[in-house]
Each structure stands twice: as structure tokens, then as C-alpha cells.
Length: 361
Length: 127
Image (cartoon, rainbow over the protein chains, first blue to last red):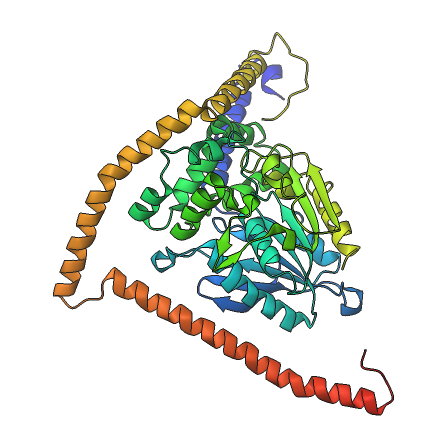
């Protein structure tokens, strides 16, 4: 007999509703404050230098069915690379392994106070060549493909232009900040390219740039969405386990912040954002001028149409300047991270990257 | 934001409130994005940052000097000592890495040469 049939007030229903609300609140708190299990695909540490680590993923496809050319993934220097392997069932790493790639991941690690002077010169000319040497040695291949994301794409581009005969066959750039001609394209460039903004002052005072500061800067580009909207979204979908799992894993990655080496930050703001040296052909690294015309590898430039961190014009501008014969721009609907880790990535972005690489690997 | 395609039910006050909340958030979000993308915001945040740094830098310097002096007086390594040691370790790691690569190259060279020889003696080509 229900409460209504018995004529009693619907206290039971009210109690149930209150209990449900309490449970929702508990779930909300748990999702927001705990870490999900991310980056679960089995991998082996094959090389390490200072904080940088190179991992090789355990292949899931027999050797004879694998692609000949290995793929090295280079992520940004101010975030953990776990977003490439977000969660089982929704992981770019998993996807590429299933499609027969010999897959390597370079994790730059978190810089310590002793790394405050590290610059892009070090990343592109000291670390990356060693990583590539190791990849070639382990895979036995003389050629390789490289996928760079955000500042990882910038480092990959610098390397590709400076060492064109090192065996780099295919270069996939994801939301690559390279061309800073338009000083009004997006919040970051507006904030940092004005005269009053002093990257030198910041680095002199702090050494490495704290992760919290970088995280705040990224979130402040879309303050309402990032500080409130995403939590409202979570509350609205609190009974949907699929959305919860996705939100939890993404939040785990977002919360895992690391500092950025002071030298690299100073260089990024002064030489790239303010002076646009790369595109103007004035960037010199360890005495070598970086000439984009020397970049001759096949290039797939993946651009997020709704990217507020790297607006499309910052990636697209280099296509006319690079020396590659085989080059393609692939525009995807979505944001800076969403194009690779969002719910549509498996349908839109990953298959295109895989097909492009497969035809050239 | 999540999209709600359900028609608005005037007898559902919670649904109405949610609709109003979403519309408000949307408008607020757009105006905030406009604000943070303005030159005025950039100027204001740069001024705030510079003011903060102007106060922080002398404090930071004074604190670092005091700590260094205190550590030196009790024969403890300072931050400079530790960072220079870490840099030296990284340099050693780099040299080891280069040596390892060289060894691998040397080890694989005779194998490559013998493979080359055997192919040649079998009448194969080295291409």
C-alpha cells in the first residue's frame, strides 16, 4: 500500500526525495574532491633524464600487423600527459594501440627549482633528440612519426625545423601555438603581449611559474564556464554514470597541475607571444636560426575551431611557411582539450589522425 | 552547458528556474568572455601583477638572503648548493645517456657488418 492509498501524507516520498538529494550531494563531493583512475594503459619506462621520462606502451597487436614507423607523442610542458590516455574505453593511446602503432609517450615531468632556467632550446635540442635516438634504437626503425600537442607541438615544430634529416617522417600538430601575428586573437595574447606585462619580473620573483597560476590563467579565459558552469553541468547530470565517469576523469587531469620552467615561460612570452620570432624567421636557438622552410616532414595540422587557448589563426598561419610537400589542415569542432578528450573525439578526431598516419606509416 | 530540448512546462517551477538559470549563465558567460578579452582587462591585470611583484620581490629577496645566511652559519647546504648539485647530476645523466647510445651503436655495428657480409656471400645485395 502506498502512502497516497493509505491516506497518509506523502512523508515517505518526501523522505525518499531528501535521501536522494543527500546521496546526490555526497556523489558530487566525491567526484569533485577525489581522483579517478586515469592513464591506465600498460606501459614501460624505457628512458629517463632529469624529470623527463619516455614510456613505451605494451602493444596489443601482433608484430606482423603493426605499422613499421613508431609514433612518439610529445605533450605540453605545463600539464601531465595523462589526457592522451584518459580512461579505459576512452583513450587515444588505447585507440592507436588497437590500430597497430608502436607507441611512445614523452612525459616532461614537473620542473624543480634547479630547472628554472630551462628553455625551449633545451627541450627541442637537448632532450628531444635523445628521446628520438632511444625511440629509433628500441623500435629498430630509422624513421618515426611525432605527435605534438599545444606547447608539445611547438617543441616538435622547432625540432622538425632544426633537425629535418633526423628521420622525422610524419608530424601531427594538435592546437599548436606558433603564429602570434594577430595580437587580438584570444585572451592569453592580449594579456601577455602588452608592454606592461613583465614575464621577466614574474620569473625573477618566482623562478618557475606555479601550476596554480597557469591553471588560473587558463580558467580565467572562460571564467563563468570554468569556475561555475562545469560544476552546474555535473550537478545536472549527477544521475548519469557515463557523464560522471567522463567528468571525474577530466577533473582528475585538470587538478593535477605542475609548474612551468621559468626560462621557458620567459621565452614563450617574450620571444613568441610578444615578438613572434618563429614566424618572422628571427628565432635563434643555440646559435641556429629556426627556419620553418626547413621543416619538410609530412604535416597534419589539427585545429580546434572553438579553441580559446590557441585560437585557430595561431596554428594555421605556419602552413604557407613550412617546406613540406604533403601537408593538411584538419579543422575540428571543439575546444583545446575537447577535440582529443571530449566525447566526440573518438568519432571525429582520432580516426582522421589514425587514417592520415596509417597511409604514411 | 548542458542543452535542454524539453519544452518549458509552466507548471514546473523547478524547470522554469533551471531555464532561467541557464539563460542567465549563458548571458553572464558571454559578457565575462568579452570582459577578459578586452584591452582594459589586460592593462588592469598587468598593473595588479606588477604591483604584487613590486611588493613581493624585495620581501622574497630579503627572505632568501636571511635563509641563506642562517643555513650557511650552521654549515647546511643552501638552495643554491642543492640546485647546482642537481644540475651537475643532470649533466652526468646526459653523459651517461650519450655513452649508452654510443655503446649500443658499437654493439650493433658488428652485427650489422656481419649481416652485410653474409648477405654478400649468399649473393644477395645490400640494398
